Image 1 (tube, one colour):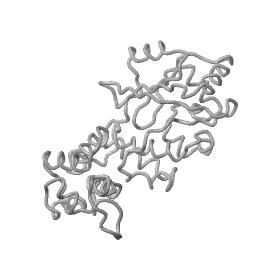
Image 2 (spheres, rainbow, N blue to C red; image 1 turned 180 degrees about the vertical axis):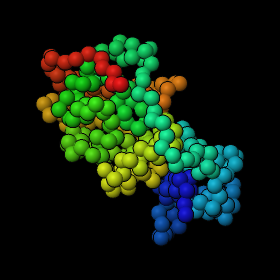
Image 3 (spheres, one colour; image 1 turned 90 degrees about the vertical axis):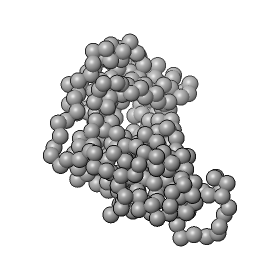
Image 4 (tube, one colour; image 1 turned 45 degrees about the horizontal axis):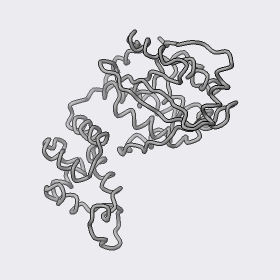
Length: 279
């Protein structure tokens, strides 16, 4: 039986073309990507040891081996953080089957004031589970008609996978679905994320469960919204992680082109509310 750590290393190895590392093309293979022997050589570990890691038979590699694998796979900063998280989860540092305490929905007053100062920008506070905890009136304007904010405690992940309107609203639904599923690896705690995934899986089905074991971070691309009245809106996203919170972050959506900027100005002429914190 594999482990998240082994699955990640194998998936990353399979995604790398040998030529990108200056290795010769050795002809057709049964599996794509970098050979296990080539990765082991780059990491200066034995092929047997690498096999044990990938197959889940070694669950606690040393920090030196983890760093060597990260270097050998040319991981970026986000992928290195994810690799270290998977090591902790695989070796049993995070476990538990009992339903955990839900993450706090409280947003610090200073964060709420920061969001208020961002008006009339499009911004919201969320956590890695996808809870929408506070937002500007600009965010409410952009999301109006999508269905996301119609529930008492809106959750972007649940909306993406269970509300049919999401597939129309998000022009690149597959990309957004990949992002939301991947974010669950970094939830407030492993126990909380596992509970959330178990609760959502029966409702969301295979589109959700099929993404849970994908360990490669999705590529970062502009967010495209097919707005019901403003048509296509394109956004660049800035995500600011908030310290000392339950994996909360402040996300700001910035118009990616003039068409989007003009469309948002038209939306702002409509009646709208101010900052809203969702308890």
